[in-house]
Image (cartoon, rainbow, N blue to C red; front, side, top):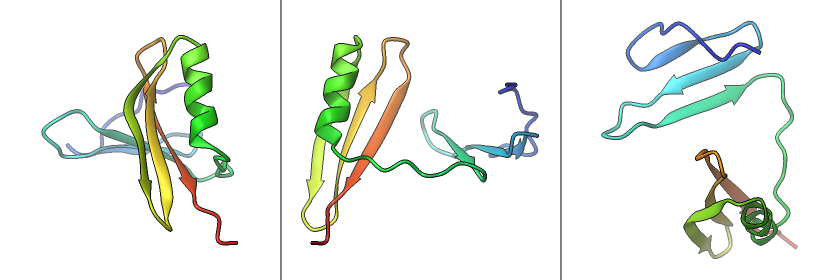
Length: 94
């Protein structure tokens, strides 16, 4: 898979042949979003379980769990390669 995409402007990269849209957001820090048109969105059953998995694999928690009552919980983790991932667990509506 080729992750190198030519920039079409200062703030956006083009779709590759794999249908990945990689966009660099204009911010005072490096912030890149990656979207795919062909993938199914995976649901997070528990951000606590995700955090435990990262810790077992040698990663760290970079943003503690943030819970917005009635909406969702968010946590950000860094793997042992330095990549940061954020996960959202939607609150059930039962």
